[in-house]
Length: 360
Image (cartoon, rainbow, N blue to C red):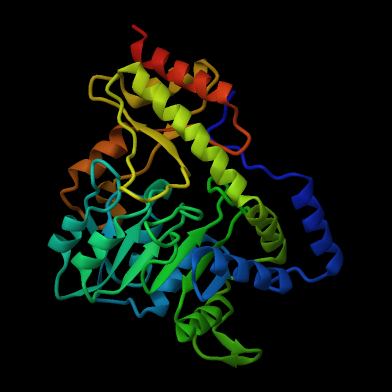
């Protein structure tokens, strides 16, 4: 079976973890600090604050920016629920914006239409590692603070800066589906020293220094084990990016050659996606997606649901008209793409997809 994802954790990571275990320092020590420095450098930021998950990064980042009851936060409608959950947990309201049918990111014109007098900030998502249209969004939001959810976008690049550098704050995730994984983990990135200091307190029980508690807060610290793994993975991130770019190029050429009216995510001109996810938008004429996925599994290929339309999740209490997000939630299919995947496996996936779509 060719899996949807396969994290590459080898002898280098094992040795790094063993060193942590032998050191006796397991939580938020020198390795976390080193990982933060490398992340900030990679993203073109002054500060990185490592935390226990990408969801924690979103929650603490929005909290540090003062999001609370009565506020509205603009948020793309196509996403894993974490951004909207973070907004709701702080007592604010997610205001959903539809996504563009080409790049699958929140459409700048939709942000403009959704803004109101209660809008606290705009949250943008580099969906599946594809950079948002930064310049257009800057024009649309004006003086409205921006938070960039770059959970999937480490290694992606805008026209003139790395992803993770947009807005007053950005966030990363190191879940196993991401290019760089620490098992679980995340980070907040910013150029604001005061904001970084508050984030450090919020991740550590509200402490500004040992025993000096500023406010009630939880425990969102990253372990030394996670940071040690992350440092190993960062060292080979460029090689991961190069390999994914080649595999994605082969995918796109093979998918277009099928002539089955499949659509792939397009990147804005002048940017570079890290290709965190390889996905297709199935045509309306295709069999139902569950049937396509089962047929592919029968042929030895794992495929998955692409993402969710947040407007359809009743617990979020934020219905909206988001036809593009709805369509992608219904017809989007994630295909295998991971470090170590071979060109032959790409061909096998495309052939399985062809058979799944054309089988009578």
